[in-house]
Length: 221
Image (cartoon, rainbow, N blue to C red; front, side):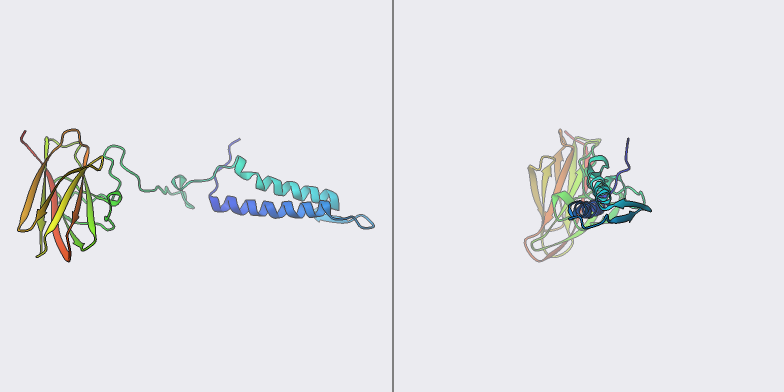
């Protein structure tokens, strides 16, 4: 027999109710008998105190044993209204786990993206504008497994007075290269090879820096 899954709160509530029933049942069973036979009415039926105690105890035992028969509903099985509630997880093909930016000509970073795990997904040809301040960084991930070329070119441009830096990592989080935009835009090409994605960490050394970042597939050997 299959039982419908219940969320953790409901299971806990039923188990607490079961513990109360079981405790009351034990009390009735172990309570010293007085002169005369005590009668207890439960669910419209009349029982002697010992019989009622046993019945109440059994009801509590059933509630306490619910976790053995009723599965607990996880976050991915749906909420109160049956809608799917899935935790953010990596795309099985790209390994991307952060927020996907719109595949438009220009867009803006989406916070929080201050760690590799929260990296914004950046598509080829999209220019993203972001801001970093002293002690912070912005992370992006560029899926390149479907790149039509064997090279990817990154463009970094500071939009203010303060220089901005970029460091590239492969899917194994190993450093590939780094570069800086001090005057105008800086370009850096990376061989695709067997890489399926490249992470980009953008940061500065102090103050506030506004920047533009983009990636595109380029030809050449």
